[in-house]
Length: 111
Length: 115
Image (tube, rainbow over all chains, first blue to last red; front, side):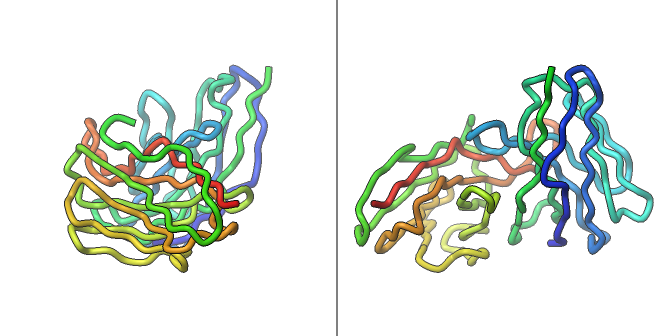
């Protein structure tokens, strides 16, 4: 699986949009971009994923660049409960592989 | 998390003793993973399984062994625990969620302290 690069930390004011970037310049054509988040010491939780089109669900939006070398997770109206570590990973869907998570981005939402 | 449970949730043991962590799933998913999480290192893959009796090493497999004798259980064993294996261990399963997305679902974690 391709490796990803994320900023170590970011801050966001409550109610504002949080935009979390991820670089995956070595992504392969059949690899999806997945986002997970980990709140405090809980297990990571799935947020959203996409292949090349932008995606939106009840939690977030995912914007993938046309060359697929980077993506942005958007939390449209961040709340204090969105404070967490966010992980971007790339993987081939439906297969087992050596999935690596890296250290993610620690998002701090403040009042 | 629904469909995946880890046991024990907390364990304190002494250096040199064997330890087994259990991951149990009720989702009938084919793929299962063991990760460890330490400050400053994020989640690191220890071993994973792609079916009964089919396992492979991850990036930090030294000192760990795994077994999967049936679909629902994936066991992680530390044959002789060391202090460097003090960590939080997460199990994950991979399958299709209610929206048809192929995702990883993680357990609540097992906190292991080796004295």
